[in-house]
Amino acid sequence: QSALTQPASVSGSPGQSIAISCTGTSSDVGGYNYVSWFQQHPGKAPKLLIFNVNNRPSEVSNRFSGSKSGNTASLTISGLQAEDEADYYCTSYTGGETMVFGGGTKLTVL
Amino acid sequence: QVQLVQSGSALKDPGASVTVSCKTSGYTFTKYPINWVRQAPGQGLEWMGNINTNTGNPTYAQGFTGRFVFSLDTSVRTTYLQITSLKAEDTAVYYCARAVAGTRGFGDFWGQGTLVTVSS
Image (tube, rainbow over all chains, first blue to last red; front, top):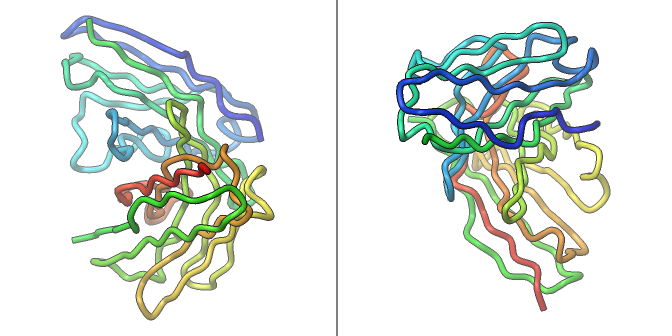
């Protein structure tokens, strides 16, 4: 199972909105509505931001939103803040009880 | 409150074995599968597989078959990751993460991570 494709890096200024893409195939992202997004700060465990494409845990800011079109999922962060600078990973169900991660995207807040 | 607490860091020789534990509390253990995730130094996250905490049935990702074994002890609400015949490339932080209820997703709660270093 190949990793999902994410841009290596994205950047934005405080207050702006950015989107991170996550491209897979019809066997993973396109085939199921089980895409999740995680945020990871250096030296910390990942934090769940989005599950089931566009569902947000109650404790996660509504500045984070998810969507999907075909084989590509996206995470949008609005109103960028300095604390959003982190690595972001998508993951998708691939059938047969298996999952796959994207390669990760480093977000820099300028 | 839900907690996943992992065992401490380990330094092992090549060829040795290591067991990482993930002790859970604050929820019904058998209702949520536990996933294992590897992160090599400076690298991304890799899904290793999961274990059904109700049946004990494990599922392994490609690349994590043979030397990697998931197990559990329901009596102490703990799951285990054993890695045998350790290689230098197994050096990584290993995380356990709980499945999210009612979905194929996981990761609403994570362990703190366990650093396994393989070096002579």
